[in-house]
Image (cartoon, rainbow, N blue to C red):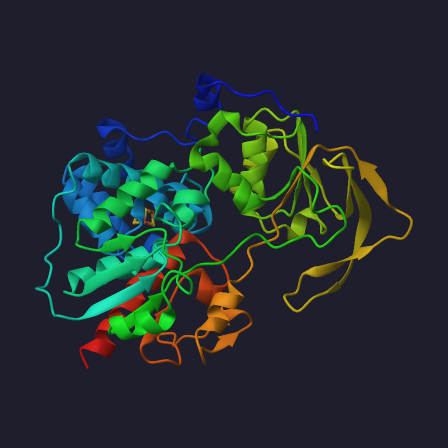
Length: 446
Ligand code: SF4
């Protein structure tokens, strides 16, 4: 296996420098001053957490930075991660009215980051009134964005909160699963500290179903919230998947974020299978780790690829090669990856979602020499865990919940985030957690 050269700490810092640098006081106020403070705030409707964007921007112009952070956190507890990792061009900034005027939209994500980082640097003073303890306790499984948001909201309402987290560090995908040049692990852990500051307890290294049973949790708590997200990256199911140098995209990103930094092994020629945003994260990380050649192999055409425009441009700027209408059929090698055998496709009939299906072209097989294969085909649901909760209703591998209250068919159990939606943005999970907290409060306060 040919490896890319190892990076020194300094080279790593340079290659993984933040894509979008922060504002300072002057540039933030100048950007905020361009906002029109629209009466109908289309940007707010474009934000899945419905943050009152015009109000928080206005507060930046008057120097009321804590007030600005309060407006943001009032709708979204995971606001720093979202400010840095949300696909803002298709959410709030995509909805900004300035686009229609042919002008650059307000940089809402960057302004949100400015307000929240100022709040963290100010020592996280108390912004919200907390109700006195009501004697009731809620257990939360998973400390990702949904679990944290649910815990924060319920702690404000006076509940005793215990979060159970299987990893050694809390934060879920915000901590482990986003490219390091977008958000750092430290960003996510600051959000965790803020939420712990509300009295939320987090126990790490606890695997529910092994360390403690669901039945024990149901006995111990007045209600349970499941925010376990999804599991490992889906497998390719082709020969050669066992070879050294084959790895799932999330496992690859996690390895980098866990501190292997510039010293992680990356192949010299890397094939990334799949063309979603996680594939682009994995491919651009490999390129920043100085892989000589990184290609994305996708079975459909450019028009059907799930990655958004911003990510696609980023990958192309990084020199990632795209091989569309191509499917891998075998990973070649003895012990280590040496190549990947592919077949060319053409587009056939549309599938249930209206996307045209790839149809293999006979006798079009070819081999690409590569040293590493990263598969990014979406995450698998944690079905064995979900099935271990007796009688929990699951449909299409997702937990079924009431769309208003997030209550499952077991009245004591609520759920939110990727395990109910099949995998969306961090901001959707943060919104679910907050809404579910209201559902739990309604249930427990009768
Ligand atoms: Fe400001 Fe744009 Fe939102 Fe209008 S749509 S309030 S200009 S950010």
